[in-house]
Image (tube, rainbow, N blue to C red; front, side):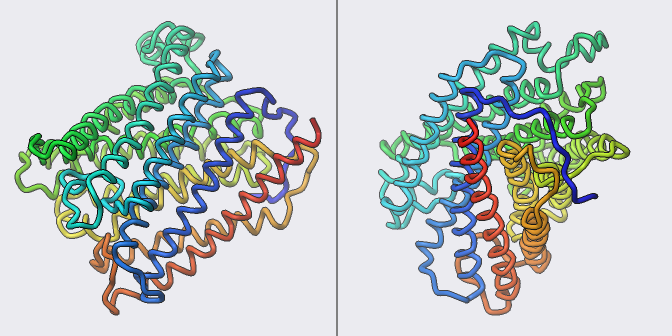
Length: 487
C-alpha cells in the first residue's frame, strides 16, 4: 500500500442531493462520536475506574445501542441515496421527509431516555418496556417506541421512492435485483452493482421494518392497555428478526460507496456479473434466514429452527467473504491504485466487515452459542463489523465527499489518523472477544474485580478511536468550508 494519493478529476456533483447528503453525514458523524463517548463511559465504569449508577449505565446502554444503530442506518441510507441518484431520478423532497421523520424519532428516543429514564435497551424486548421495577414510567417506554416507529415509517417512505424509481428505470424490481439478468445472461441489460445492492436492501429491510413496526405497535398498546395480551415468544422472534435485518442493512447500504468510489481511482468499472447478482440474491435470503441463530438460547423452539440457525449462520458468510471481500481484493490487485484516506477507509470497511463475520459464524454453532451468546463475545463481533466495517466505510465516503482534488500527496495527519483508527478499533474489539472467551457476561453494569482488566485496556483503545473520530469530523467540516469557499 503506497502513501501517495492521486488527483481524481471526477468530483462529487454539487447539487441538492449532494448538499442533503453532506448535511446527513455531518449529523451522523456527530452522533457516532457522542455514542462512542457513551461507550467509553460504560467501559470505564465496568473497569472500576469510575463509579456509575447502574440506572444511568442502562440508560447510556440504551442510548448507545439505539444511537449507534441509528447513526449507522442514517449514514448508510445517505450513501445509498447519493449513489442511486446517479442512475435514477430520485425526488429530494422524499429524502427530506425521511430525514425529518428520522430526526423526530431521535428526539423521542433521547427524550424517553434522558428525561423519562427509559433503560430497556435498544431492542425494546417485550415485556421489558412495561416491567421496569419503577425505573421508568410506561409513558417513557411509549415515547421510545413511537420514536422507533417514526424512523421506521421514514425508512419505508425512503424505500418506496427508491423502489418505484428503480422499477421504472430497470423494467421492474426483478430487473433492478438483477434476477432477470441471472436468467437471461444479457450483460447489456445488467443493472449496475449499486442498483442490485439497493434493490436487495429495499426488499429485505422493508420486510424487517414491517415486522418491527408490528411488535412496536403491540408494545405500545400493551403499555397503554395492560390487559392487551402479547405472545412473548412471538414478540421476541419478530423483534430479533427486525433487529438483525436492520443492523445488517446498514452495512449493505454503505458498501455501495466501495462499488462507486474505488473505480474512480482504478480507472476501471465495477462490473455486474452473474456471480455478483447471484450472491446478492443469496443475501436477500440469508440476511433474513440467519436470524434463526438468535433462537439457539430458546429451549422451547423446535429443533429445525436450531439446525437452521447453525447451517445458515455458516452459509451466510459465503456471499460476503467470497464475493465482496474476495472480489474487492482481486479488483484492487494489479490496478496500480494510489491510496488516500478515503480509499484506505473504504477498503478497511470491507475487510472489517468480513473479519467481523467470523466470530459471528463461530457463535452460530449451537455448542458454542450455549456458552457464549450472553457473553461479551457477541458485542465483540458486532463492534468489529460496525466500527471497522460500516463506520469505516461511512468515514471513507465522508472523506471522499470533501477531498481536496488539488492535493497530490497525502498528509501526515491522514496517515496517522488511519493507522490510529485501525489500531484503536482492533484493540477495542479484541478486548470484547477476549472477555467473551473468558465468559465475562454482556450487559452487566458492575464487573467483579477479576473481570476489570479487559475493560480497563479497552478504555485506552476507545479513547484512541474517539480522538481519531474527532479528527475525521474536524477534517470533514474543514473540507466543507473549503469547498464552500470555492463556490
